[in-house]
Image (cartoon, rainbow over all chains, first blue to last red; front, side, top):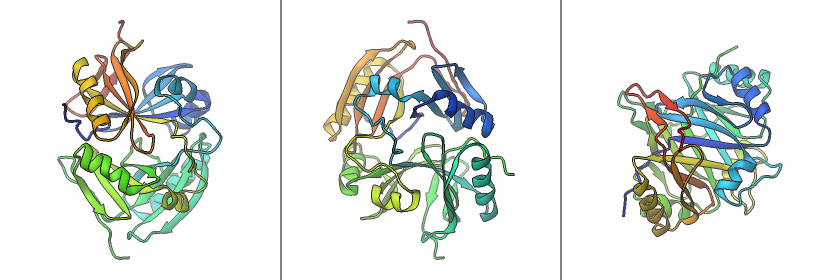
Amino acid sequence: MAYMKPQIDILTLGVRDLGAARHFYVDGLAWEPVLDVPGEVVFIQVGYGLLLSLYGVEDLASEAGNIYRGQQPAGISLGHVVADETTVTEILDRAVASGGSLVAPAQRRSWGGVSGYFADPDGYRWEVAYNPGFNVAPDGKVSIQAVEG
Amino acid sequence: MAYMKPQIDILTLGVRDLGAARHFYVDGLAWEPVLDVPGEVVFIQVGYGLLLSLYGVEDLASEAGNIYRGQQPAGISLGHVVADETTVTEILDRAVASGGSLVAPAQRRSWGGVSGYFADPDGYRWEVAYNPGFNVAPDGKVSIQAVEG
């Protein structure tokens, strides 16, 4: 039986309105698509070997089974790590100016950093974080630890 | 106003039972945690500079606002790309043997490859895909295209 490597290549967000999602990420945040098929799918590169896919939630459900398609956003969060505390607030401002909504302003967290949350047009949460315990080595290996605040 | 780079560093899945999620990913799939804090959080590296975080959905909701905590799984999918068609089925088998459930067996897709879906204990969908149009360059840059089947 094959070993499944610990590896995510694509994160697909099922969206209610592809045009609105595209407007937020591509026009608002100015993220250039790798592949943009109007009315069907938008792929954006969001890391080494990693794509974010915006895809109609009805289309996704037809492949991926009985998934949630209601009004409340998914119980997940996409983490975006930045270099300092000031940048956390600046990026939350940018997201709001792009059509996102502020969920939680920047605040000190128990793990020793500062973070805040915004929501995209479908309610998907992004946590923007300054985290002194988060480090990526040159080979891509991540270390993470709680730092006493 | 700061530019937000197109970058995901951490994908947090809000889970109903951290022990069950840990059992599936750590014991079942044999994915070694980067940081494992019993009863609180499990971090697993799933790409270059990328962590998967398993975190109680109630804890996540207390930070990330009014997110969905019901019984239907989120409208997202995590894509895992493999080298050939046979491996798709082998990995679906492995996931089921680890305590996941089969959502859709391996099948030919309109974009020119083969994929199937399994669900983790919280219902989060993983698409296991052989995709001849998906390529990662040595610098990490991804290209993706539809291939005529």
